[in-house]
Image 1 (cartoon, rainbow, N blue to C red):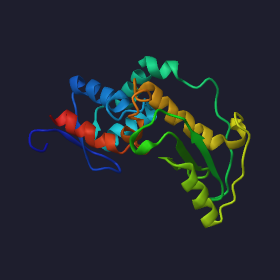
Image 2 (spheres, rainbow, N blue to C red; image 1 turned 30 degrees about the horizontal axis):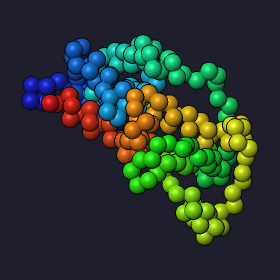
Image 3 (cartoon, rainbow, N blue to C red; image 1 turned 90 degrees about the horizontal axis):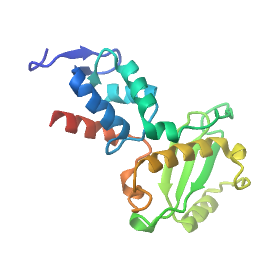
Length: 202
């Protein structure tokens, strides 16, 4: 007990605030589909809530139930399992793809370049101007391997990241049509933790 609030000591995290049944539904909704929510799957949803500093006894079961009942998640769920491409060590193999065009957003960006490390699955997605990317690759001596358009098997990891990014944008009503996709979405998702804490505390 700290300041009349119950906390649980986490295994690898700081103290977790124990929340009531009335509060847990609001936290699930905010993290899953709130201002920075990406409609993530149940395991990631529960982990994100724990990293935000919240806990309740049936957190994992409640997260799974919430995701199962989310209409947008069910509508945009993938139709078949993805195939894995193995990489022997980090930075050995990268997947690079371009997503777009989108309505013009801030800084006149219409396209997103998605870069994925096949070993650690780290995703970087940045709006870009194509001339700068070509100059950068030439200047760094990067050899590009081009794959066929509409052939996701040739660049599977980047295509997988594209699906996640596009699914998150589709689930956010109006984000693509109003050009706000550029400034609202962060592929790492770290901003939502602060927003959840601020919303629940107020």
